Image (tube, rainbow, N blue to C red; front, side, top):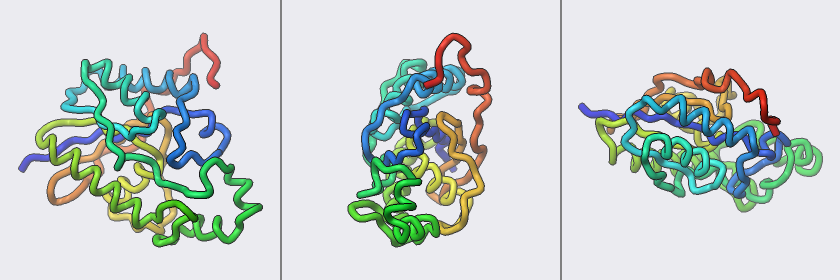
Amino acid sequence: MYCTRILAIRHGETAWNRDNRIQGQLDIELNMTGRWQAERTAEALRGEPLGAVYSSDLSRAADTAAAIARAQGLSTQLHLGLRERHFGVCQGSRWSELETTQPELTELWRRRVPDFAPPGGESLLVLRQRVLQALEEVAAAHLGQQIVVVTHGGVLDTLYRLATGVDLQAPRTWQLGNAAINRLLWSPQGLRLVGWSDTLHLDTAPSDEPLS
């Protein structure tokens, strides 16, 4: 039976990642470190056979994907279903601010209540369904191939849970690093985890550029 190998990659770093500010579906661009991470990831994957490169349409993901696609002579295919979770009224705020101004909301968030949605945003249940549908669409189109999917932390957290059977409310014990390479295997029977959080290509920072 044919399967699709998936390289699931979080976008490179942004200034808001550094600032612990909630991005959600706001379109925040890569910072200098993030652009360097994108190029390093592209170089790490240069020798890997790729059938396609898919990405969220948000620029921090799309620009990361573009570097990978460019190194392989491919174009990037954008998919709205790969966007980060919509955090509604929380988008643009720092975690520390929300803990002070909206303690009840942050408690529901911290407990990972599956049907809780920030006002104007998505619940974990809605996110999981969206991510599952998007992944099935792109993976089913490339049976027998390997593809890249560049997306966001919340989406990758969802993929990890889908691949391992970890409950939506279980505490996270795995990493979701910027530009880390995560390997999954998809078939019509489901999703499996192959490898997670490979960051060897990011071990050596550039010595001649500032990292912010």
